[in-house]
Length: 191
Image (cartoon, rainbow, N blue to C red; front, side, top):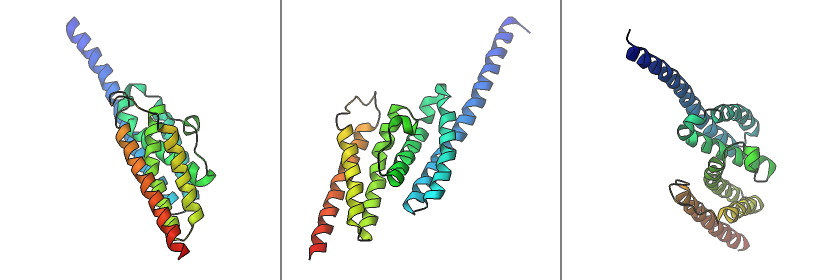
């Protein structure tokens, strides 16, 4: 074997190992996205215990993924989905917004996940109003306002925080439409 063939062989061996790590990370990322969606569904259905069990497993996967920094770009979406599930879980069970440290993800994943929580809160508001529970609906709307006000000053170039402005605009629209629904419900209940 020539010296060049030896070098190419060593590079190939290194890349084979990197491919193995990548495949493992991608499998874990898909599992984290799936689990996060299941957690959110369980929360909407009132299955807090089931959501808690899923969250425990999702937390372990998220921690494992965070150790593979070389594939951060590929795990970003999974970490955002996990952040969304974790933030929504804490709001539903503890009636507060968890810190980034509590969630355990990087800042960008936390921010992006938080913006996605607006859709879940909107769904909770609609469900609460359908049940005639104005107090809960107002609580969820107040959480929306708190999150939006806290993130209002986040303004970075698309290359720095990709997709955030769009998510922030969608969150604002969801917050404002929820306010309209709350107002309409309050007016109708007075009649």
